[in-house]
Length: 266
Length: 72
Image (cartoon, rainbow over all chains, first blue to last red; front, side, top):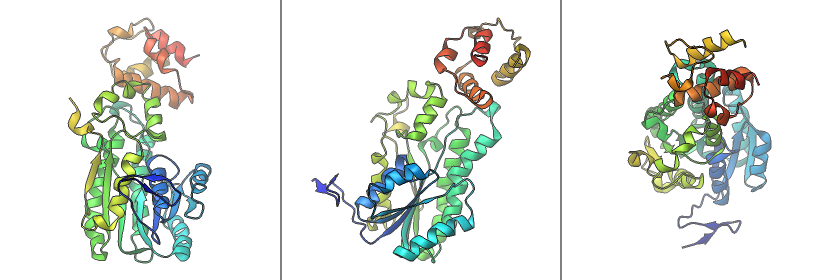
């Protein structure tokens, strides 16, 4: 069945209704975070879209100006006061948050023997530490409703070995493992948290990684994906599902969405 | 970067114990593999502050060819 969203866009066979719900998306200016932001807005939610690039963020906001508000934060250095500074006004205006999504991540290819400490730390800070500082605040009762749901991003890369992927794989494995402990802590407030582990999704981040590898990555990429390479829309549906009431008994899980990459390798 | 420093960096990057000179053929250096190639691109980006053309690196036959890419 085909449905029409509030902007008349064609929606697929599952339709989410997030009217009067409030969400925060970190990493909202591009890739998977942008897609989730747009899908949430299309489903009627109020979204606080956060990224470090204000210009691209504003392009996202303009697609749903009455649904999306924006805030600029650099997750590499954002700490307590920065998070309070963006969450306070949003919650004051719209009410408590029903869920949060953290998609911020960067990839740097580096071999063990040529590991650059600064680059490796940036990778872990962006994917892992940034996520922790975000969750530390947003899961508080002051900001989030009873029953709110959080979705963070691990990666199919955390399941396997890949040359040059040490920091990225480790950071993403840290995410899906931290999720289990966080899930058991926040369950007291009926809050949930799950991670998604995407395979290769065509975004700015993976395009940069492809460039960085000088074509090595792309040369056999297609054949490693039985269902072909991913697009952000392949991921956002699961994120919205995990935030919906239909997922109210799912917490501490990692969901692999990879077009068959992990099962199909030969 | 002079020739001596370049060779030193390249030896470090590949972690090879072979004697490397400007005329060494990359084909004969066992450690010049896909990972060394990617590391070389990363090193160029980091130290030169610009991306070098991957195609040129792939086409390089000798250490001197790589040196010329760096010094372009």
